[in-house]
Amino acid sequence: MEQDVIVSVEKLIESSQAEFWHVPGTNMTCCVLVLESGFNVLGKVDQPTPDPETAKKLAFSDAADELARLETYRYATAGPRIQIAAPSSILTK
Image (cartoon, rainbow, N blue to C red; front, side, top):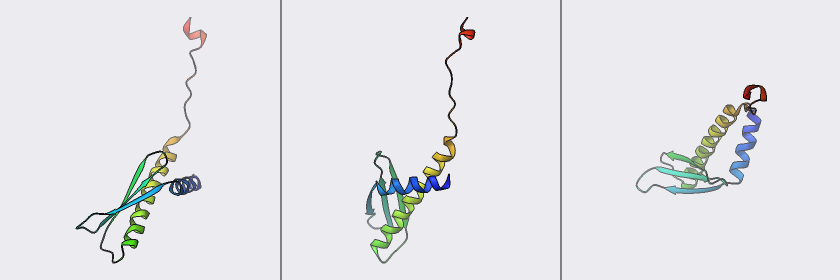
């Protein structure tokens, strides 16, 4: 399962678009991964960094970690699907 999650997250990141912004007057830099499905994942970093590119990389990494947590949860809870059969003729008589 772990390998499936890693591959899934990598594919989602490759096909996503990353948007960044710095909140004026703060140390907060945010990254939103916009997935092809339209789902958005937020990553953030709130620490002083001398280089804005470093802050973007840290926020992107946080967004990727959040996506990995969501994918891990999805895989862990997917489990086998229960199929409910149509009522048999014995039960309907």
